[in-house]
Length: 321
Image 1 (cartoon, rainbow, N blue to C red):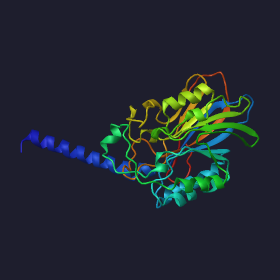
Image 2: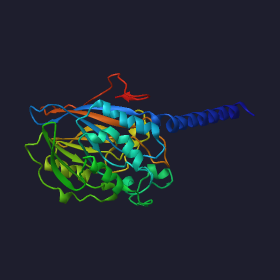
Image 3: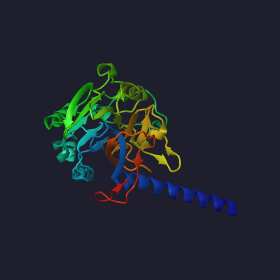
Image 4: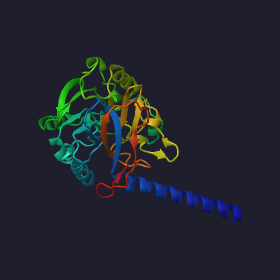
């Protein structure tokens, strides 16, 4: 073998080894590196006391995912005032008890929710290339027992915001909230909740699973202070220095996770979620996350949301960001 051939062979072997190591990390380590994202958002009425909101999304729960269940249940130690669940809780027809165990003590706190496509239908195997080149074509899996999950949540006092507008009180603070069914499946019917929310509310909150711009625009136009969504998995596969490759919706890549402004008066928070499809169990540069948002009174500043790491840790193998 010539020197050039030996060099090319070594490069090929090295590239293969790096690729295998990266895949092993993405599939075996990072997708279980439970992470807590924290942000402070100026969205409350003037003079209001801060409100701590825990955002949970995209659990994609399988019955045997004990580590995920324990970590989510332990989030109750954060003592949130409100829990917002933006859907895609299920990934298996027998996963409802596992989701209820995971939410556990959080169901004793005030909570609201909407469902996503994987609450209604089980995931199916897809060509991995379709992740990078998504289309509008939908092939549904078997129906999932979302009604059982809804009943468990509602029985414990959580509010189903699907095509609903409501007022409720959290520790003396009035929240005007509204939500839509999953825009990813084109089940959203915003006209059913259209209109200005109560201007006297401490917080005006919009909730959706998929952050489709057509829905975000309607919430913003109606005057909501904060919109919360999931679905994107933060891109699930991110390239350092570049970010998310895709968002699996019409939202731009720069907003695939975290907080940003949507229009002049509205904030958007997108959760990167805590799970993956069982047919694509990898994450890279995008660990699974829940978010703790500290909501404070609005200011005249247009600065980005104050997000960052404080060096603290929450739970085994988790980072606070």
